[in-house]
Image 1 (spheres, protein in one colour):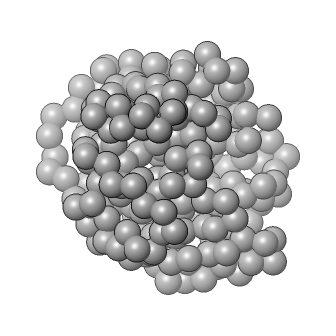
Image 2: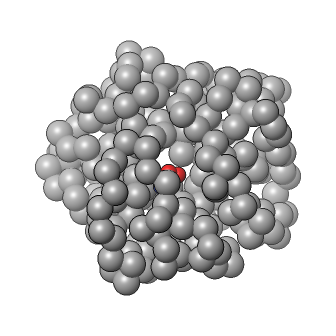
Image 3: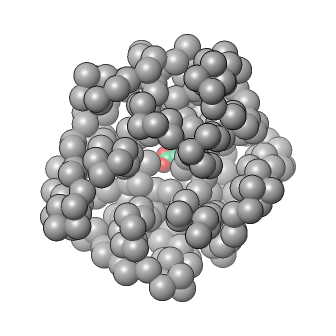
Length: 252
Ligand code: GLY
């Protein structure tokens, strides 16, 4: 099974939360076209797409990955660190439960954003960021340890989420732009990339990754490692501290 959960961007995307970037004008119509192109990449690769209901009153609602994280058959419903984002779950959770997954819920005072969760093999790196607190990390550890996952907390101060700074290639190599990474030594294998937008990859299969069109030199670097690299423009979503990873929840 390869399934993608997404939600179309709100026309009010420009009003979304910003933590490390300055607010700049956002072209909402272009954002919508970029989102459609992003989803089309997955459809063309045979993924089934589940769309959450529009939630235009939530400017950040397009970043669905922050609301749910899936481990095998367990979907962890998060409690986003930004109070403005918690209402997004009302229309996201029904999609998850409709897929028949087991669910667990992060409860107050814990907070967890899915963008802070990076899985590499059976290791789950969790960013201790401005959005994910110690209780969030501890709750995830309690849920996952009995299921055979090791949870490792990682400091995140330079970017919004852990995955705003690092993601992983299909072979488990963690990739990141060094100025955005607090401590690359926590990862078993770390590959520096030359562009800030180059840190975010979505693994489509063992040989293929999807990444932003904003990082052509990084795409070239990954190709020299034998990967097929697909790129798609997400400039309008990057203005809101989004990237190719947080635009979807992937179920494999
Ligand atoms: N704009 C994405 C977020 O701050 O959650």
